[in-house]
Length: 346
Image (cartoon, rainbow, N blue to C red; front, side):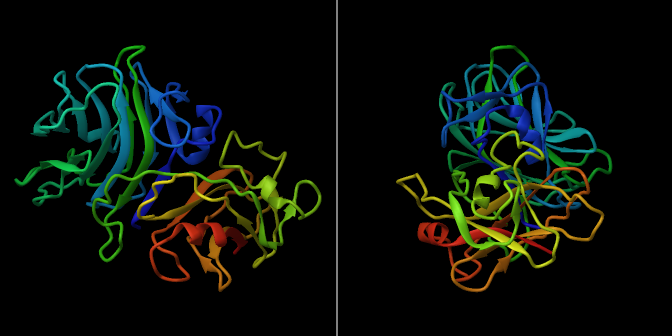
């Protein structure tokens, strides 16, 4: 595993639907449509609330987190944690002078930033950490707005007892009502030698797209009784999915649906470091069929990671290609607009 998860918090109308994207909510996050970094909205939390996402990373794995952060207050408070076994072993804490400290599970300060997180300004955070009883130099680092601020160079125990696995990340709030922390374009991954996602990736942004037309494959049966406009039933990830009201389905292995996606909106596109396909789906029988996302642009279908379905329960699945799997080269905007993404029964 390398790339794990990305969420722009776009295209939802209630933060309760974040659970469909794998988030665990403590409290009630707020959907912000006035203050945001990318797209048209982000989420904020306040009053000792938090949101968590499982990492799926293994023991002693270095985990990376990248996100945009905005606060409307000046208080000392933890706003991000690498967690494991129910505890927060590596924490980012903003101080009353707006600098950031890395705090370990024993409340020891492992380093302080020179940069400050000015209130009412978006800042980009990149955090790298691992749970080991003796970390190596550069295993724990913090970047703020693209600048390396903290590197823990000495041998340090970042484990809590024998806990050596970052099982989840946690975005946190201040402890007071009406003092908000805002988050946008959240991405996380872990190290895998030889993969593009094995180090910091710079200041990343996310653009979220929903299908706007059918692709060349229309093998699924739509809930509207035909396969004419299946793309209209393919937006389960975008909102509180409507359960069994609109959907596409098929039970035969090898059957597939593909969809076209609109042009990107951003006018200042730099390098496209990855394209993620996200899905919410379930099985309605006890068969062995699952779903696998694919990309195709006039050639052979390039399959992603199979999403193992749960009978009778909707679950979230995703796959990221860090390069165009057909050309084996960096993504371009035209790849995304001329190609098609879809799902195949496997």
